[in-house]
Every structure is written in structure tokens, then in C-alpha cells.
View 1 (cartoon, rainbow, N blue to C red):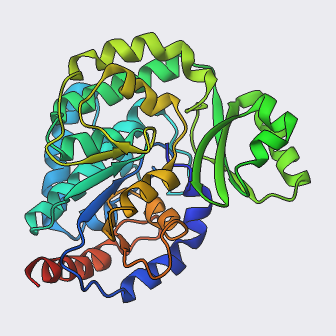
View 2 (cartoon, rainbow, N blue to C red):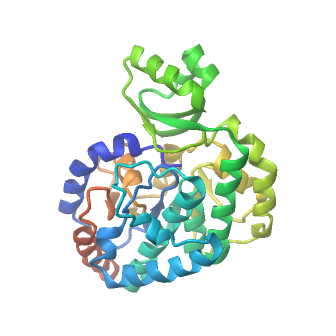
View 3 (spheres, rainbow, N blue to C red):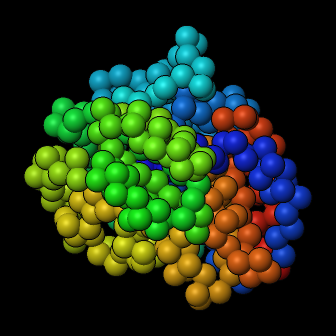
Length: 348
């Protein structure tokens, strides 16, 4: 899922202003695309870019037509629903999962049209499937069909629940018995930020507990307790759905936040782990950074991974990060600034 949304959007304006002033100067730094998952979605995501960028609009239209045949409805029309605002909950698992994928793939294709392609990818939870497609080991139609059917499995088989983003030391989850009993550690975003998942009935008590501990927190807009023991009932169904993908190999390196490292060959067990194991974003980025600085581009709907990345990267380490889309808009402006900057480094 995308556990940084709760505090990511709060900081998005500040982070984006910083990004707009960033100077990209080293053409030897590999470009890394960041793909987010559940929790990064919202109504009207990507629509400011859709209305102003012909390439993005073309790719979104093509992808939506393909998805319509698989999902039985236009995901684009759902995102653009005039009755909805970005603040409305968009938590239907099958359609929101496909919607995130379409946004990320349309943006990735748009960037490719402009000559910007990744040397590697990082996928967070369901964002792994857009990263697999970008890496050439998964066809668009198969990825969309899988995400839709996986979403249906979660919705039909797993009990309702949610996820809470917490600002604090992840060790708190082990130190607090009640927190450990009623919630699973679902992710570690950075040194002072983690996520827990729990059943719906336990969420109010967890929020009260976190408040009593004076820990800033916010519920993430999801309807199931992903990355926890409570999605185990869907395991057999998901493994059956994932079986046809086994053996595929990415053409470029793809780092998985459930593995804290690269996926060299798709395995059914790894695809289950994408949904079940904690999202270890901090450790995955540190694994990449051990080989040197990178240029990160968040292609997700909300720019949340870029926000979290600011808290992971070492000051003065040489890595840079940019995002394009945000619930606050201005995607066209950031895209227009990003393209010449990355092009310049490729020819430097």
C-alpha cells in the first residue's frame, strides 16, 4: 500500500517547492522510478495533467479502453466523477488498484515519449505491478486483470480493516503490548515513521492508544488491513492468480520493498509477499544507495514516496528526488521542469 499518504500530503507543498528549485547536474546517476500502491489514490488524480498534456492523455485513454474490457467499466470515468472531490474516500479495492496502475503507467509512457526512461524501479506494494510492466516482464492486460481480480479477492474474502501511519520509532510497536496485540507492523517508511494494520473494529481503540502515547498519526484511505495477518485468508486465491507470472525476468532492475532488494525472477511466493509482508521502504532505498547516488522520480498519483524519500536519503549524499503528480495539482508545471532537467543530464 502507500503508507506515507497521511503525512506525505501534509508536507507536499513544502516538498514540491523544494523540488522545483532542485538542480540535477550529474548524468552518471541512474534514474529510478518510484511506484506507489494502495493509499496513494484519490478522485481526480492525474486529471490536471490529463487535461494539459496530450501524450499523457493519449496513453491514459488507450489504457482505460483496455481496462474497460477487463473491468466492465471506465476507470477514467470513475476517477473523473464530477460528484467526487480528491478528499472523498476512494477505497473500493478492485477499481482503485487498477486506477493507480493506469495513472502510473500513463505517466511512465508519457515520460518515455519525452525520452525519459528508468534504469531501475522501486515498487511499493501494489505499485510492484506497474514496475514489473515498466521493466518488461508483465503485459499491461495481464497486470490490470490481476490487480482487478486480486482486489476482488481482498474485498470478498478478507474482513474490513485499515492502516494507520504513525510518526515515531518503529520499535514502539514491539514495546507497547496493546499495539502489538491488536495491530501488525505493516511498514517502516523512515527512521521515525511506521505503519500498522488492524481490523476495522480495533481502529478506534488504536487511535486512542496512539493519542495517549502522544504519537502523531493518521488513518490511510484503505478498506482492508493489508500487510497483516488478516489478509491470510486470500493467500490461496492470490497464489492461483499469480501462478502464470512465475519465471518472468525483469529487463531492468526492480527493487521490491517486501524483499529490501531486487527481484531477479518472479516467483509466486514473492508475489504473495508483496501484499503480505511489511513495506520496508527505508531499507530498500538504503540498499540502492549503498551503490551510489541516484535520481529518483516518483510516478505515483500523490508523490508520497518522494516525500518519504526526503527522510531516508543522507544529507549531502548526492541523490535527488522529484515528483510530478499531487492532490494539489501543478503536475503539468512539474513535468515541464523535470523533462529538460533529466534530458540535460543524459546528454551531459
